[in-house]
Length: 191
Ligand SMILES: [Ca+2]
Image (cartoon, rainbow, N blue to C red; front, top):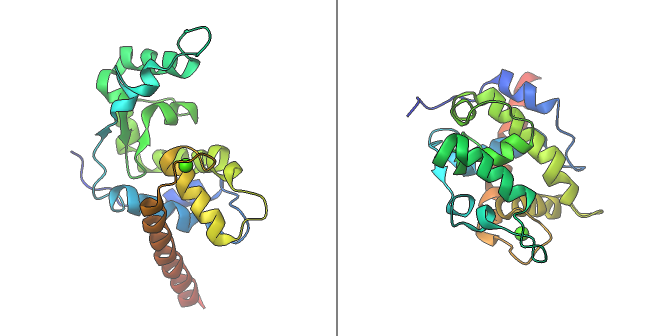
């Protein structure tokens, strides 16, 4: 297990350049809150095996209901599994990003690098938010509505399905407010 990874200023700069959050939402507070909720801010960033992504799991076995052929996603998981075994079915790093998700977001390196390269993992988390999460925020949502949709999409994969992880949304919203307040305090201190 590596030493806990401090998330430094350079890491945030990498991510901030990529983020265009919904109006009224602070991108850095978002990333900090997810790192907080997912791994106690990098203190607890051990890889976690997600059974749904491995042999016998729902994503690994998913087939087209008509043709019975494996879906492209299932084929991709199997390719990664043949290369990395169980490492391909884990979430990694301060943001606990699934390896396959990181690959889809442009990660071109190993699972272990996703664990150890905090700046790289932060950039991938930012890309995930930008490409896959923000587009799920309903038009005209207020800030709390946007935060709820973002937390729902991050945790359950979709903000538009029946699975609404209320505990996670609440925990995330609390962390977001905490990190936002800390950012404002730092900013006020600059004056
Ligand atoms: Ca959902």
